[in-house]
Amino acid sequence: MLIRRIALGLLASLVLGAAAARQPNAELATGRIVAAAWPYLGGSLIPLRINGFSPPFQAVLLGPGRLLPGGIYEVPAQSADASALLVAGNGAVLATVTLRTAPPPPAGRALVIVASYDDGLMFHDARDFRALGVLATGGTPSDVAVDALGRIATTDTDGTALTIATLSPWSVAHVDGVVLGDEIAIDRTTGAVFVTDRDWNGSGALTRVDRNGAVVRVATGATAEGLAIDDVRQMVYVANANDATVTVVNARTMRVARRFHAVSRIFSLALSADGLRLYGISNQSTGSPFGAAGAAVIISLRDAIPRVIARSADLEFPVGIALDAATHTLFVTDEAAGRVYVLDARSLRPRRSPLRTCATPWEPALDAAGRRLYVPCAGANAIDAFDERTLRRVSGAPFPTGSYPLAVAVWHPQ
View 1 (cartoon, one colour):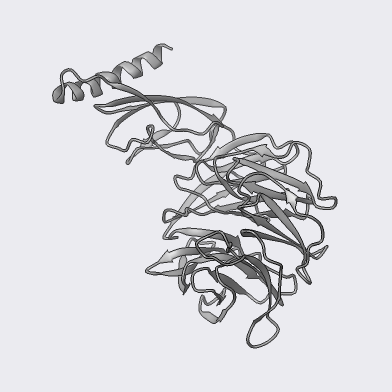
View 2 (spheres, helix red, strand yellow):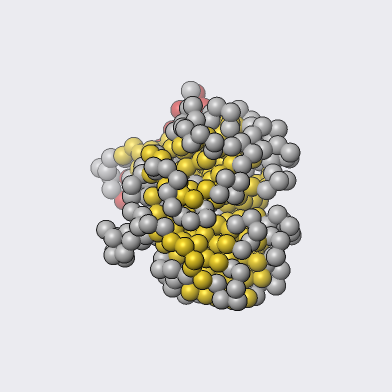
């Protein structure tokens, strides 16, 4: 408490002095530094936001870590159970927060990793969904992927950096030059990270980040969103939502191999195990500005010119997709209806009534090893989970997670 009073007194004297120089009778308001409810993991980058107020402000840190230029608190890479006091203010506002830090997530345990738009990457124990900590990336994650080596990659959909963390040993790195990243995937053959960029120099694009950190990019079409990798043929499929096309890019040369018309508002993608069928979501709704029904489609890749060979019935407002190749089941989330459609992957006919889930379900994830379907619910700040075989909700689900979750990845120890 003595250290806290010293820090508050030091900063208050600075900001009160600044305020007095301008307005002798001004009162200093108290504010709150925005922070996650969970402990932060090592390597976190936490921008200081004071109740919506922007810099300039002065800040004081008492505890582990350091303050970086631009008002960012960096948690030490190898953190432990500890706490840090942050005090920030200017001539109008004085705010404080005590942040907790946590040790790295255990690489020997199954983990559920959530891309939380507002908070960063949330780590949960896959057994009981207990929150282990959050890795703040300094940006706004929209998707997350993990490979067999325990490399975790996430986007910054409002910025220009890719964040890559490794589980064993725990480390965090950032690669610049990945602009407005949307979806992300890691190529199992080469280990390269692929990201769709919503906008780059007036066009959507595909970015590849190699294991050595080299960044290569190619324009694909208007507003690149969905992503699927054929790691056998080394081809990457990119959904260009605003021109109704899919672009096929050679993963090794990063040259466009072909581009073909798909369906309006082509959004999310999934690829069959044999690489001959591409599943897509037409992210539309009769009640939206698009004024047309949404649907899931199958695009045959057998011929020289890919073509739509099946379309589901009209869906209210579909957004995300997950393919269970073993059972020939396609799961499609509906952001407006709060449900998950369960479709036959061969015909796109319903296999059963939709699964009811929490508000604004986004990109679903099928955990084949754990036999679970995970559904991030952006409007509920929660993750729902269903047994893959029975499609019954798993005990403990839906469970709370970071603010505005958009995607899930699952790590299983090898």
